[in-house]
Image (cartoon, rainbow, N blue to C red):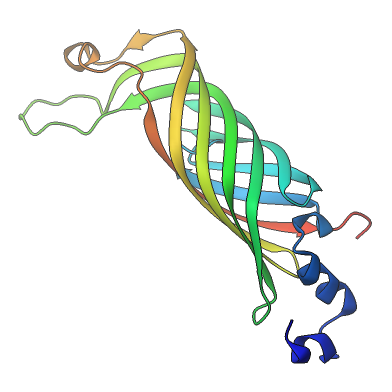
Length: 192
């Protein structure tokens, strides 16, 4: 441990304790704004989480997509946690396992064949997804939180199929798709 870090009076005692313990649970309540492609709560959403233990977070949220309201829940595990004392930040590399549900439209890039087709080939009233992803998370001692994740969205079940473009409906069904997530949030301690 850096002696300057230990004796620097401008760093509050609770901050030194937080960084020594490498615990996200010191600020266990987290609110996040999320965005991404095939993200847990759609391209635009919000989640809330609770860190009962420093290495595990439980959360859920809602968001919107072009098809409608998306709902999701997740468990985040942080097996690798380390600190950056120079910038007074916690860092974690981990995994997040999510479940999401909501309406879905199968987007496909328009083909340059001269004919006009819908960008969506099919839709479902409800799809249930399993969403595992690898994540990198960082949190300042003041509570500012950033997260980036990459993974896949695996369809588990679906209902209410509707073909929107007869030419392309038969070509593509409901497939596993890549997902990318970005989140910005703020965490605070209970009692603040």
